[in-house]
Length: 364
Image 1 (cartoon, rainbow, N blue to C red):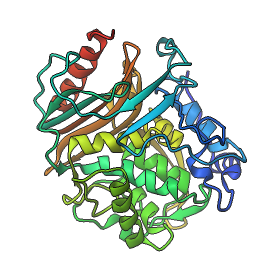
Image 2: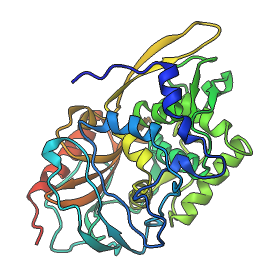
Image 3: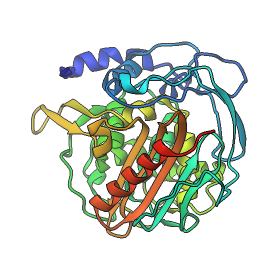
Image 4: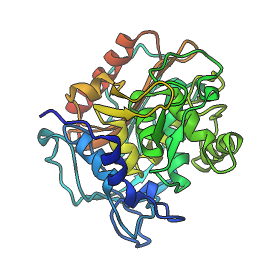
C-alpha cells in the first residue's frame, strides 16, 4: 500500500499535542502507566513503521514521562506489552516477563556458530543478557553515524517542543568531514522532522541543527551526550559531535550494545529508525519549497525481510561500514552491533549471517 505524503500543514497540525511545556512529551509514554515498575514494550519494525511513526507525532497524553527500563547494564525486570510490525512478525507472546542481566559471558552453550569479516562484532541475547557472539567487542572504534542514536536520546531526554520549526544554518553543513546532503541552508523543518531525517536518512545537517537548538547550545549538547554515555556505563565512549563525522566519536561494540538497549526505551527512536521511507515537505524562503523523498539507509529495514525494532547505519573512512540493530528472531530478542566492515556488502553479509543463525539457535 502506498502512503501519501503529508503536507507541512497536516504534519504540524498532527504534532500540536507534542507541545507540553516541561513535560517530556518528546520521549512519549511506553506503557501509558506512571507506576514505578520498570517495564517497556519490545516492539519490532516492519510494514507498519510509517503509520506508527505518524501515530507518535499525533499522540497525546498527560502521562508522557518515559519509563527508564535499563541504564544499559545491570539487572532489570522487563514486561512485554505490545508487538508491532508486519503480520508475519506479530506472533510472539505479549505477556512474557523476564529478568535481563548483562553478564557478558562468552563461550556459553548458546553461542551462535558463525564467523564474521567485520572488525568488531557483538551479539547479545537481550533476554538472558549473555553474549552469544563477540569479536574484538571491547576495543573502542570510530562509530560514524551510529552516533545519531545518542543524539536522539539526548534530544528526547530534553522534552523539547517537537513542533518547533528549526532552520538550517550554514554552520550546520560545516563539520570535521565533507559529507553529501540533500538539504540546503535555509531549509525549515520542525524538530520531529529533523529527528526523523537524522535517524532514518542519517542527514548530518539535521543532527547538527538538533544539537545547535538544544538548551544551552551546541556545546551543552555535546556535554549532555558524554554525560549520558557515562550514565549508561559506556566506559570506552567519547562523543565530539552529534553526527558521527568526527572520527573522535568512539565506543566499543559492547558499549554500543548498552546504548542500543537504552534507545529501546524511546518509542520515537524505535519508529523513526525503522521507517522505510518518508516524503518531507521542506520550506525554504530563498530557494522555494520542495518535497524531499527519503529512504532508510538500512537495506534490511527497506526489504522488511527481518523483524527489526531499532536500526542505525554508519560510515566514515576511519570507521568502515557499521550498523546497530535490535531484533527478535525465534521468539528471542537480540541486540547486534557491527563495526568496521570494509564494504557495505561485508556489513550486510555479516548481519544476515547473524540473523539467520539466530533463527536456528537453540532456545530452550
